[in-house]
Amino acid sequence: MSLILRIKKKFSVIFKFLKKKNRMKIGIYGPPNAGKTTLANRILRDWAGDVMGSVSEIPHETRRARLREGVTIEVDGKSVTIDIVDTPGLATKIDFHDFLKYGLSEEEAKRRAKEATEGVIEAIKWLDDLDGVILVMDATEDPFTQVNITIVGNIEARNLPLIIVANKIDLPNASPARIKAAFPQHTVVPISALKGLNIDTLYRCIAEKFG
Amino acid sequence: MEGVQLNLISKEKLEKMSSMEKLRMILDEVKSGTIVVLESGLTPEEEAKLIELTMLEIDHENFVGIEVETYPQKSGGFFSKLFGKKEGRLTVIGPANKLKTLVKRDDLIKALVKP
Ligand SMILES: Nc1nc2c(ncn2[C@@H]2O[C@H](COP(=O)(O)OP(=O)(O)OP(=O)(O)O)[C@@H](O)[C@H]2O)c(=O)[nH]1
Ligand SMILES: [Mg+2]
Image (cartoon, rainbow over all chains, first blue to last red; front, side):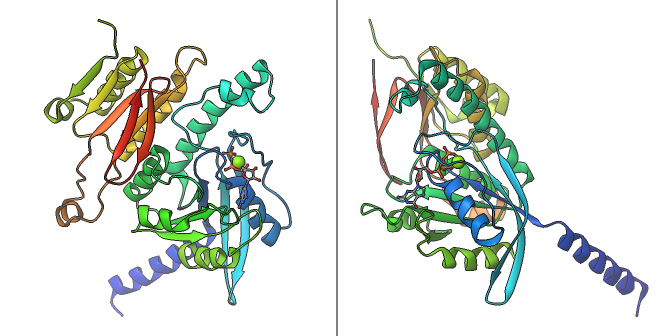
């Protein structure tokens, strides 16, 4: 064997070893209220026996990114271990008045709004440290929002593997087809994170894309 | 005359500016109530940076954020694949309390400007 070939072989072994050690870090992204934490909780409950964080109908419930390391998902005898980051919902505007209708006091609403702006910045910063993204959209809503377009654009620019989740398909007015039509170049998996509908398809997709 | 100011910025002018110059100009104009129209838009990275800067400047009183209207990047043209250069698309940016999206599709955007 030539020297170059031998060196190449050695490096590929080291490279494989490094790759194994450095698990893929997968970020869960999306607009506020899409169901990111509900999905993270379901994945952790199914595969790690704990939860990620609190869920609420009030937008911007998650205001700090949360990292859960070493979650092993097994599908068809194949197993993949990933780190999961649940991120705060991304928005281009945050108005504390929107929180008042949920019964928050003005002081609470203002604090929530302030923390939410910091959360958005943190979520954007995390983009540079990820190896893949699960983008959660609410299938009852219009998919062509600026936030969705910006997230997809940034993931494409960084060449990261992407799974788009069309969430809340348990609701009667959900239209995963609208999301598929909006982002035809990407994999779209319709699920209900709340009810667990079609969740096995998502796990199979995670094993394929991030394995 | 009372009304909402509209600044239309040409592709030529945008090409001469650095990212930071563009974003600073956009935010300053939008914070003063102006609606900014960019002929050639922003890159995805610039869009993310604009959101970050916007979050830093929200004061929970006069400025609550921005509304951005743009079409998704067309992916997969032969030249964009070959040269990795994406054509920016027409983009409208305004203060969230003045500009409201009504309908947004891949080929048509309807928006409302409040005085
Ligand atoms: N019907 C239905 N509701 C859901 C589903 N997933 C989440 N929800 C509800 O949507 C609301 C928001 O859920 P979260 O998981 O907190 O959403 P999030 O994306 O983490 O929101 P932020 O942390 O605020 O960005 C809650 O009331 C959830 O119960 C679903 O699949 N179906
Ligand atoms: Mg959350």
